Length: 239
Image 1 (spheres, rainbow, N blue to C red):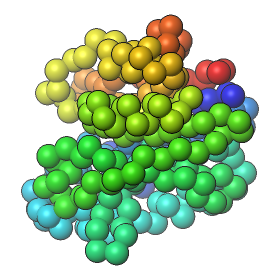
Image 2 (image 1 turned 30 degrees about the horizontal axis):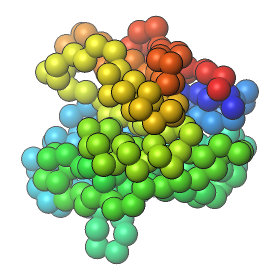
Image 3 (image 1 turned 120 degrees about the vertical axis):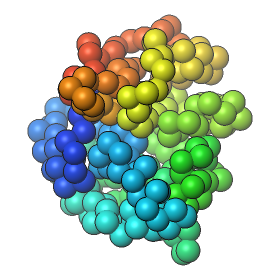
């Protein structure tokens, strides 16, 4: 399985971020799976600004501004690799979720709603999911966690015990976020459960300084591959 991890740099607007993703997908014809970061479309500060302005209605407003993205991804997936589509705001009935869609040839072959949502998501009106997902890529059992899910042992256990490979889209950190060296939680889970973890991050520039977390593929033996820096790249790994 040839996996492409799009470690993308924030471009400052939803439209520009989505355009970058579409172009990346179209140019990755030599891979089987391409994976995107959590909330890849939303620029730095957008989530915070929406929550400050709209409180519990922020998720609703974000969905209204970005629900068109799903159709763009669905369209580009017809002639592309299997797409682990980071995450988007999903509306279901009267609730909103942080959802990762898995697309193949225009079809949703799986979707996962983040379970361990953080305070910022709760304040924005996002609801937690309640089910893990397991799906096949060729003959390989795959699962998904989104960012803070990896902090909750019960979620890690359920996902990893049902998977051979786990995709972990993570969010862009804030400039004030303490720097984390390496991938301690991913390494711990990979070794404990014998899985491969594909970690996909997003980076940005703030006050002239680039920041973020390096994307990586972690196996039970340790880090198999890691982005050289927090610059934008497509990290291609053969598993």
